[in-house]
Image (cartoon, rainbow, N blue to C red; front, side):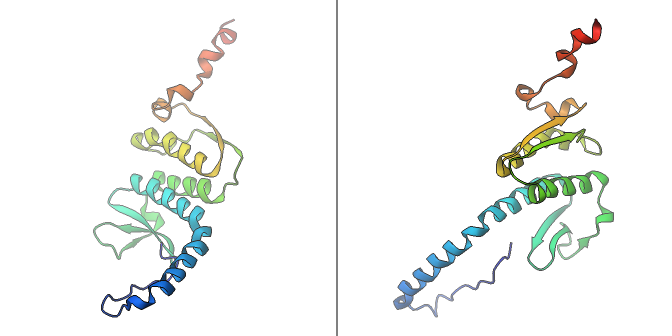
Length: 170
């Protein structure tokens, strides 16, 4: 994610006698950048989820420009948000807010996440949401009318129609 400026030591200029000093530097660098591990995990999850949904384009994250949506055929062409579908925009905003703006150890309620989502995305939604919940320690309740949202997770779904059918019919 280009968080730091790094350069590679040219093999021809490398002097083996400096190995011990270089090892101390690398170990120190690794220790200092452990603080970025949680951020990098979040960036990895966000880009993976969003890039699975985008077609003919992908999200790119840089230190200088933040998040950009780039055309796959023209890597230097940054797309405007207005060029994305409503579903693509919804997924970017939703998963950004979930991954980066949601505090840990909350109970999150999501009502009808399937609106504006392609059927394929509906099927992936709960898998991705469970990964986010695990990363930032959330409990989640999703209310949906879409069988595709819960199709891969019937073991954790509660059908309120079945649960309250007797009360409704009496």
